[in-house]
Image 1 (cartoon, rainbow, N blue to C red):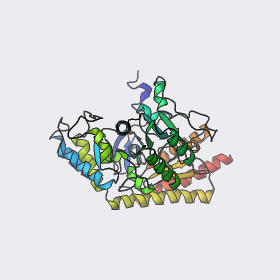
Image 2: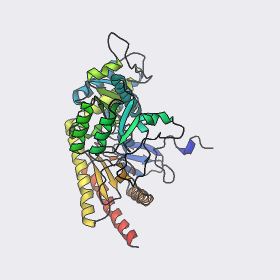
Image 3: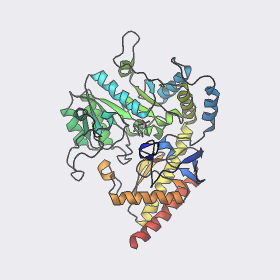
Image 4: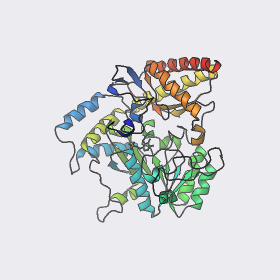
Length: 425
Ligand code: PMP
């Protein structure tokens, strides 16, 4: 009997038909147990912004190990990372650390509830925010996906989840201004926050429109509803994160992935007035937040060292690589007229087996046939020594070079030729 149900330790591990096991990572590459060397465009689901075995993190963590990896007391290491984040992320006046993006989103929602005294949340259909019941309710398309006018209905995400969870989750569609306004004004007494990933990966890795952000800001402010920007994935978009790129001024921001330097982490940051729910000097907090491993020195040190190395120049380097990649993919598509499209920004991209780039989740959903095409693309890339996640965001890392990008473009061109030949056959 296998030791893992389903043969894997997490549902997100790709199997085709079985997962391949990694032996080790090295900069922008990983090597599997069969000795294949692959350019890693997954980077543990966008976490490893410096790729594998980043020397400054290795050194800092190995120095730290012998002096203790966790204490029931605060250490100065947590102040270092907190100050870096507060300095860079405009919406983060104060910070609390946790151990994962799931936990960060959970505590941000709880903070919004504690601050407003309201139970409900509004979130974007199809966007992924981790495994807190309220953050994932409605993940499945509840109503008829072909009925574009229908307001999506939240459903508990999994069999056995209390039905009552869905009573307090209200779905809107990304970039749907009218639906957003309708919901926020109608539900204003019941809703604590809007949870929004500025470029939700599972909902297409699509940019928000300016009108959507303006409508969100105005409707939320007028109704006393907080905006939580879930930047667990998208913080890697710039030195100051993703929200400023799109003119979004959130009340709370969640972070994770890159800020841990390859170790488990999550963070909730926001306006001081709201962050007071976590603690005040004189009274019992409205929302006591703990966590055995929260702010453990290993994640704090690794995160600070990795983030310090993410200078403005390094963000520019990733931006330029991303631009070269996306524009290269697009020019192949223009040249061949192949029915694919590309979305993304900065170091993130996603290829869609669709002629028109999706603008929200329903347009990004794959039919079975499209799913097979994407699996074929991932398989083709593997043959070219490239690991491409095929249902979510792919990403770049700082050790990558123009020649790595050009390898991806060559593999894509080659795939388009094979795909066109197969279609003709
Ligand atoms: N929010 C977003 C936007 C995410 O992309 C993810 C993970 N992919 C999470 C939350 C959950 O983070 P974690 O896997 O660290 O719990």
